[in-house]
Image (cartoon, rainbow over all chains, first blue to last red; front, top):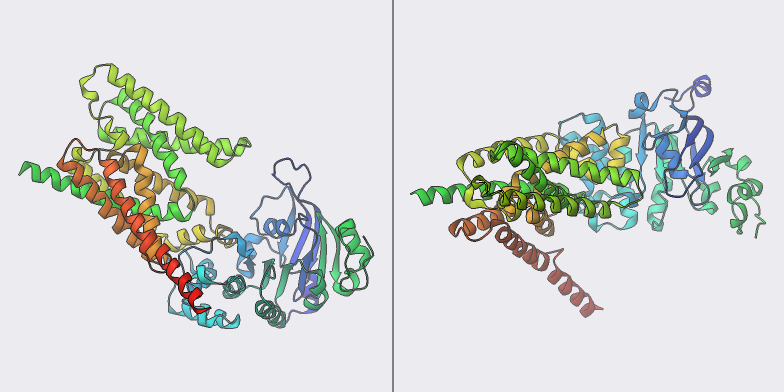
Length: 262
Length: 288
């Protein structure tokens, strides 16, 4: 079902107001995020870019209540995270887990179904079938029974994506899915993002590679502890805004026009 | 006949405690909490001494004292890491050493009192299976069965928080409570095991079976099964050997048995074993 325009206006997929996150880190006095306002309409692919330490992952984690918020309000389709949880999927950075954990690819993918399975119940045949289908979508069907310690980085990433797919969410957060993956995986992820958009889903992606932003995303948010700019790529992804987000650290040419900093 | 009965109890108690340690140790190892287990077991010693001074030598009271002291130790590690800049390993080292030192001091004091009933408290240092009675075995059996049941009930939840706690939290699981549940079960297992393996070496009975098991198998279910079996073998062998000769402390014998299993596993396991690795590299060099 495609939402009508008025619904779109009423409830963005994600709406963040006045979000501030304090960083409980040694020696750091600056907040990790300061007074962030962000609105992501339904059905768009949005990239979040910014320098290291800009709070990109923090923005995702604070939205999902994995980190405490000092202030602010986050709404998903107009509802709180607690109410909208089943509509929200999450792909953590793949480096955040121990891939030597004794389990198989299919088993990891099925973890995406635990939330709706409820307590104590064990996954059954339909769950396995659903997980296998998601593995086919990311091109890992042949690896279903493989021990996860024997996956390449790209295969690990696709396993995480398959796990998010079985969550069957309306809004996805992906933390650096393109980081250090092979070309096959990069293409698979891009293809997957387009499929998700076709289904009317919203995807928010923390991204590092400025040169692919215009190609992969409809909208972009430039972040450096505060929101520098956010909106459609062709309006927002400008030299001036990049300059503001990255300061003097940026000295290469990207996407829309030239960046002249040294 | 009398000797046979004692030996049967010792073997049974050793096997049950070994299996329980191997079972719980799987989670301790996968969660990187091995040293926390060591801290808990050392921290239990002053609790045993204080319980004895307050309430005499009832084994249940002694276990309760051990549990309370271990819990206080765990809370102190948490308090140190959250309120200071001291890192967790240092905090665990501080708590482990200071609690153990206090425990040894209290035991010496108890011994010097010349109180005849103090005999046997030192069994908690290196473990003593020979004193195992049918009541001990029953207690171990009942508590062990309850722990196993709880873990099996929350199997997929415990697996998820062990592999990917952030994803679990994002899916609405109360990760902190599940963490606490698992830590509590591990602590109960450790406290039960102290009479067998002793506070110094208990960590070995917790970790060694799981480390050995991981070498051979590739799923959590198989790992926890094999780890329980290996723990059972080590526990029983150590208990019987020391039970047959009252002079030998149980803990060291169990840990020697468990360490042999670990060594065999590290070298000879297919896939993850050292020798398999050598063979694989040789083969690859030969081909290229």
